[in-house]
Image 1: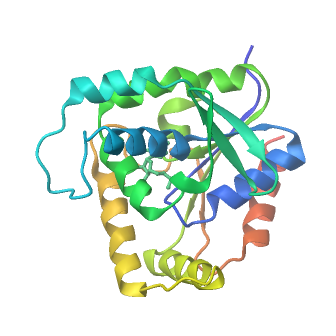
Image 2: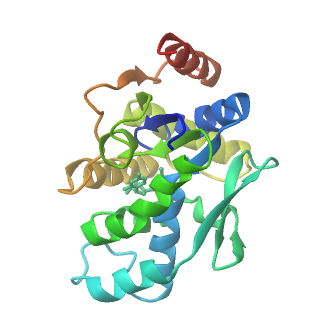
Length: 231
Ligand code: C5P
């Protein structure tokens, strides 16, 4: 038995996480934050010395990376305070510490390896065997759930996404350099869109939404209307 699956793919900063969380709450579905999976593997790989912050680095030991990925027992728990899911890795709660751009970069480094992606596939697909699912990521509609009930590809210009990040950091009382953030976003987009395995791209049957000039509520309403239109 497979429950309904709604895929929301697209680059980070386009508003997927916010829309996915709200939709999951409204519909009473589980939320798959697939980026968090890649972030955890990226962070653990960094801690184990398998990747470095310098992306122009030496070749990665793929066997060790795969073993490390397989050794992680990963589960999700909704966290109503943060409005995201917490990730439970080998029994430990990993909170917001994986949500920064540095770990996003580690994630995108390890996400290019087909065997790593394969090792994370079943865990993701199994989530649709327990309840309805909102799946947030890059390849939800193309690879993980090709026969999903609803597919949305939510994007926004790199400049709009960088500006949102700057506003977020400043609101949190931190400093922010627009140009540096824009460059980091472009590097990560480029790696995610141009990798050979499961590149970030819209599924053929996905609804495209560009959120560059839309607020979060409008994005949510459009996705919800699209879900209703499909029944
Ligand atoms: O969405 P988020 O920014 O958390 O994703 C972090 C990184 O994980 C992405 O830049 C991408 O490299 C990788 N990722 C992926 N496939 C997914 C989700 C995330 O390759 N389904």
